[in-house]
Figure (cartoon, rainbow, N blue to C red):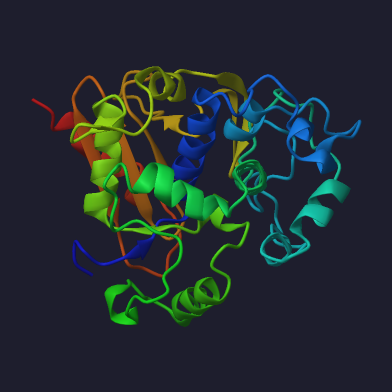
Amino acid sequence: MESHTFRRIASITKVLTSLGILKLVEDGRLVMELPIGHYLKEFDTPTHTKIRLTHLLTHSSGLPADPGSNGEPNPDHIGFWPVVRSAAWLEWLLAQPLAHEPGARWCYGSVGFIVLGEIITRLVGEPFDVWVAREILEPAGLHDTFFDPSGRDDDNFCVVKPEDLASLSYAREHPHHASWALGGAYSTCPDLVRLGRLFLENGTLDGKRVIGRTTLEAMRRIQLTAPAPHWGDHFPDWQYGLGIEPARHPLIPPGAVWGHEGSGRCAWLFAPEQQLVAAWTLPTTVDWDADFCWTPRAVIWSGLL
């Protein structure tokens, strides 16, 4: 794996989806205060009427959480990921009860970002990934960040297990699948650093405005403080911005560092006051551990002069 090797960035994709949603908000095409049923009529039900865009962006909607995020002993017992990636994802989702009142808890829910991607698709009249590529990725100069791997050689991708090749084939066969909004983008570390620069430089890169300064400021403002089950741990006061999270670490002041992680070991952060961006990834069959995702934050932060 080299700096220009493409790697699926998994849940860091959620940052791109969030930027797309907030771009539509600042353009006056989406209203944060309206129920999401205003945009997706299927959610105009008594069960879902209180869910707003903010709840989806802050993982507090009450929609099903990712398997394992609550520390369940048998996290994939309902076949969560297969149904999420199927054509029946919306029908399945609407049939599930809410786990809690919207806004009452933080529970990491990737399905909320599929809903956000579907909102973009229906509002703009084209697949969300096509629109995000044109309105976010291209103006930001993120030329090595994409959803559809078609036309790119397998040798240019980081592959550590047979499932990685299967994922590439599936993405080529289903280039606009709804679930790509939660974790389907590919990128490189240099492109992720450039994405961080977008936040440091207030939404304008190389003289080209991508998104508004105040919109990015809102993304890194605490929008939610709530109880949170967190992969076997429990927090009374987990905090979150709009699609990104503040680093929670004893060495790092609250709100000083923001970013996102992705399964399969990829991580990205930025620190506005320090004008710092960092992105790192590791080709491995091990999905996640603290030494990879959290320890580098401390090493990077403690190394600042």
